[in-house]
Length: 239
Ligand code: CDP
Image (cartoon, rainbow, N blue to C red; front, side, top):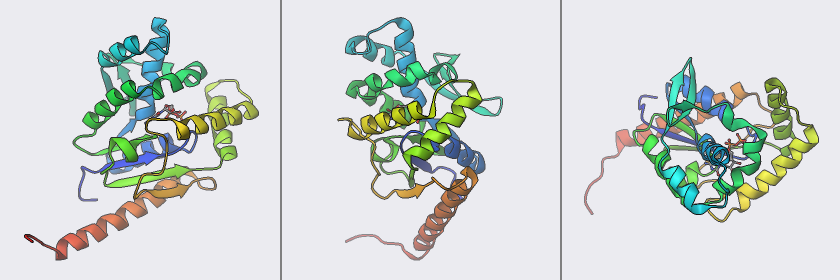
């Protein structure tokens, strides 16, 4: 791609492989990988640590407003820093996951997070993944993908990921959690998870991460070169 300032939005349900794919894709394109879920996680984590009720709107909004979130490359990996402190690991515990819905369902917090995400991505050159990136954060993104997989396959992937990190959880509990989260994400009143208009849907159930990234790159190249061809033959002005 000649243009280095595109926004690539990837949405989809839990365990569809968004973070793996977004990270690999950003690496191949020289873009920055942004995990928007980590931002909702960090507010949940900080509120839990401070002992706030997760339904205390006033305190949560004040916390979100005074929070500085930075994605920085650190030892070849993009890490999230919250007010200067690395939180990438701390925010991925089952306790944070179980409580994140209070933050993700809060319209005022979402408004603050969306603004931060838009600011982070204002100059492009990013691959941002989440639930509402193509629908709400960057509805005009040059490229939008919706990554899906069967609930069973997503649970299997999460199970392996937990095992890798030494987190104990049964496959059936993970599957149950994934189904609950799917329901919450898809039925939330504000910015529910849905396929963005113009997004390219990829079912990764039977694909390796490399195959998914290959397919995304293929689609990007095809769309990009057809846009460039069109730009080459069309110059319009006036009524
Ligand atoms: O566990 P997983 O990596 O799939 O989720 P995540 O990307 O870390 O996001 C955790 C939760 O944050 C999701 O279940 C959503 O409820 C919420 N979220 C959101 O509401 N909007 C986003 N753009 C990203 C995440």
